[in-house]
Length: 266
Image 1 (tube, rainbow, N blue to C red):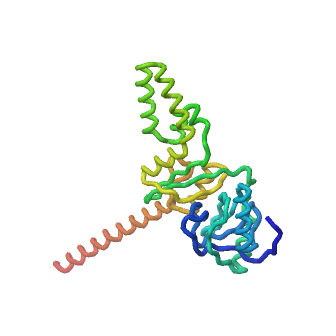
Image 2: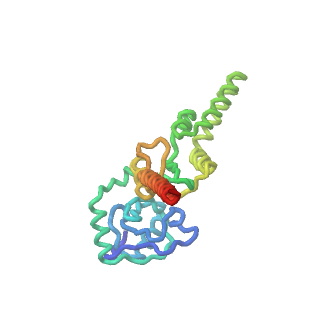
Image 3: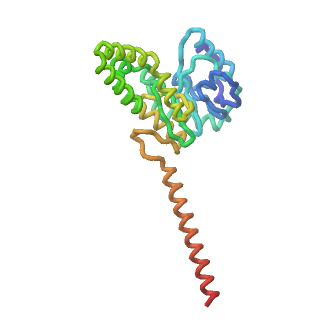
């Protein structure tokens, strides 16, 4: 980052241009730019645009820290965001700085990129944005790890049939499937999720898929994950209690109406 004058404000996204780098990273209006490569960024819009354009020229990436609804999360950036910004007040800036400095900051080398997809029922799937060697070496293991059970069953059935026909056909099918799964594994995972009605909703960096799910749960308390270490959303329990209370109230009102009618009849 070139030497420049530091201010006492942070940048807040006001408007996102369609097809911009910010849109492709699923940023939202009112997201606040807090830090770049773990360094609090108070250098203004022009300098941020300049610094991010340098990343594009040098074919490099940096880690951008975002504050959304009091939740910090990181993502990779490699180009200018394509946004219009406003700025935070001095009071907001000081609070955000204090909150950011009080949290645990991971080394940049420890971070992995995850992509979150969700459906209308808040069912999320979190996919690590990297190729797994297991997809090429042993596709059934990769399919099981990715929880694509119906595809695993289909693959097993096809391999079993090919083995009964000709062992060379079996090895040829296994080899071609391994190569295809390794090269196209991310597209396969994204496509399967889209077939389940999920859409892309967030990119973030985290040390593990468990930590990525924790961050998403903070951003969306109603989020649900398959085979997660997280408990069920507390929001659902609260809503269930509210529904039970409403049912009890309705039943109580019905009893009161019956009692009044009986009193009138008497």
